[in-house]
Image (cartoon, rainbow, N blue to C red; front, side, top):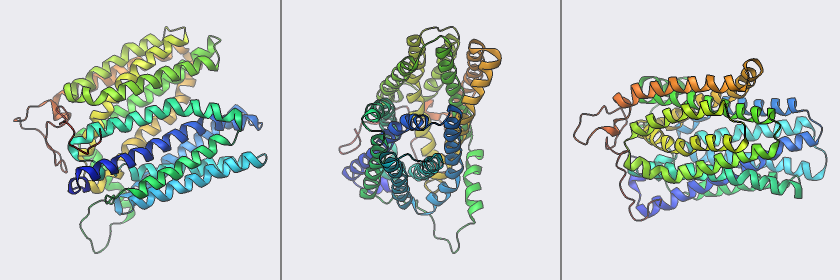
Length: 439
C-alpha cells in the first residue's frame, strides 16, 4: 500500500502541488538557462562545433548517471536524493552566474559546471519517478500526470522566452534564475509530508548494487506492457526529434532565420500545452488503446507533410498537431506503467524507460543531419514517416489486442500484471476528483 492511500485527501492535494511546483520550477529554470548557455559560449568565442560537443557530453553524462541513481532512489533515499541533487544543481548554475558576472569564464569551467548540473538533474529525476505513487491515489494518476505534463509544456513555452528577455539585460541573470529555481524545488520537496521512500520488506543484507539494477531491467523485459511502452516511446521520440531537426535544417535551407525557428517552437509548445490540458478528459472518454492507435497513425501524414512544407508556419502547424496529441498518449501510458510497477521498482523502471527515450533523442539529431546531407530534407522526412508507419502498425497489432486492458469491460478477464493493485478499467473511466485531490 502506497503512502498516498494512507493519508487524507487534503494531505494528498498539498503534497501533490508541492511536487508539481518543484518539477515545474525546475523545468522553467532549465529551459531559460538552456536557451542562453549556447549564446554565452558563442559570445566567449567558442565555435558551434564546440557548443554541440558540450551539449552532447552533458546529455551523455545525464544518461549514464540515471540508472545507478535509480537504484539508490529505490533503496530508501528518494527525498534525500531529490533535495541534495537540486542543491548541487543550484550550486553549479550559481557558479556559472557568478563567473559570467565577474569576468570571462573559461570553457573548461563552463563545461564542468554544465556537466555537474546535468548529472545532478538526472539524479533528481531518477528519484522523482518513484514519488508520484506516494502523493497521489492510483485512481487520480491520469489527472495528476496530465498536470505534470502541462507544467512541463508551460515551462517549454515560457522558459525560452524568459531566458531570451533576461540575457540581454545581464548575461548572468538566466543562470541565477535557474539556480534559484533549484533552491525552490528543494524547499518544496523538503516540505512534502508524505513518506517518499519505497515500501520494502526488511532484509538482513541488501542485494548487491548490480543485482538491484538488473532487477529493474528484468521487470521491464518480463512485463509485456512495459516492453510495448519502451519500444513505442523510444521509437516515436527518436523519430519526432529527427523530424524536428530535419525541419530546422530545411527552414535554414530555405533562407529563414532564427525567428522562423522560434515560431515553430512557439506553435509546438502552445499546442502541447493545450494537449496536456485536454488529456485527462480524452483519457476519461476514449478507450486507451484507441488513443494510442489514433495518435500513432496521425503522426504518419504529418511527417509526410513535413517533406513538402516550405514555410515556417506550416512546419509549426504540422509539428503542433503532433504536440497536441502526444500528451494524451503520455497520460495513458505513464499512468498504466505506474500502476503495473511495484513501489520498490518505480525509480528503476521509470529510469529504464526514460533512458531508452534519451538515447533515441541523443542519436536523432546526428542521424537527421547525416540523412539530410546525403539524401536531402524531403527524403529524410519520408524516411521518418515510414518509421512512424511501422510503429503505428505495431501499436495497432499490440495495443488493441492485450497491452491496454482499459478497453475491456469491468467484468472481462483482464491480464493483471504483478504489482498492479488497481481497477482494470481505471484508465478509461477516471473517477471525479474527491475533495482535496489535485484539480
